[in-house]
Structures are given as C-alpha cells and as structure tokens.
Length: 133
Image (tube, one colour):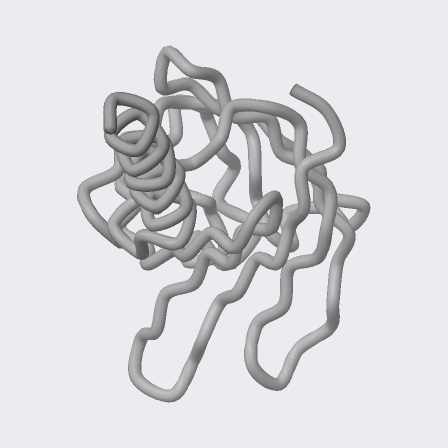
C-alpha cells in the first residue's frame, strides 16, 4: 500500500510539472542572446541581434542603419506585455517610430520570441530565437 501511495504521488508530480511547461502564463523572456528578423508591414526585413539580461536590461543591433533602431536600455514584462525604455541618444534624421521603445506584445514558444506592436495599419514585428544563455 505504501508503494502504491509513493507511485501515485510520483505520477501526480510528473503531471504537474508537464502542465507547468505548457502553461501559457509562463511567458517570461528567457535571458540570453537572440538572433532573428525585424519587419514593418510593407517594408524590408532586417536581421537583428538582441541580448536580454535577467536583471531587466537589453541591448541590440540591426544589419540596417536605424531599421529598426535598437540600442540599449531596460525592459519589464507584465503578462503578455513588454515595456521597453530605450536609453540611447538618437539623431533626428530618421523615423523615430522605429526605435525599440514603448509597449509591445510578446509571446514565447520554447526558445522563440515574437514581439510586436500595432499602430493603425502598421505592425512592427520581431521574430527572434535564442542563440545562447
């Protein structure tokens, strides 16, 4: 009887751990270096590299100047919302809506992140995957 109880508790523990892995509320950004693409509806696609730290800081770059404008700053999450504060100085010679700053939506699927925001008919979207932790 004691063995049966231990077996049932073990199976229950495995069940709870599997449910947690599939829990959509576990949508945190995993710290590490990500690589992927950025696109704006109707525009080009750029290659981006972004680093997110466990302490809430980020830095990044793009293979196209200021498309998107990714530099460094801080971030925090709340559910599926990502709040980014850019800390860099920018010149006035480009579209400042391309600066990675403000409120975004995000979802994580394994080691992949989709980060996006919509403004009217324009959608900015980052699709990045973790390279290293």
